[in-house]
Image (tube, rainbow, N blue to C red; front, top):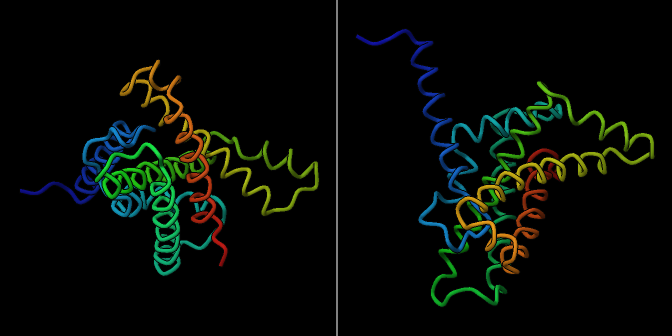
Length: 205
């Protein structure tokens, strides 16, 4: 005997959320030390992550129809794949024969950061934090585009703070803080997450 449809839906949402947050918990800045992780596309287009992207776009009053969502996700993923590939190519510390694996890991970390940033944007509906940024920018007569970039950057900072906290747990505080490679990639991942959030929330088309 099956349960009521509402209970089945709640169970599915809970399962999606559990899988998503398990990925978040295991994600850290030192991606080259990660075990096998879901591909960036799977992270970005997973059920729970897609819901977060949908809610973040709705928070900005952006179109959320399936056609728009599909086009935006495809474009953002293509850009991230390209940039991450270039960065991995110029990583002087990359292990021989590990370039493709590390590229996949980097894309996965960035996609986790983007979806987590979308979660913070959506949380503005519950605990407003975007309005003060908009007020500060409006007082300085900054453009709407600049305001959106500032909000995306702020969400990226919050998201990367969570990922860096994971790094302290998985890698260790000393290695996380004193490692030049980890710090450089932390900055690179922050920039990529901010870029990805901009591409998803306010795409250039």
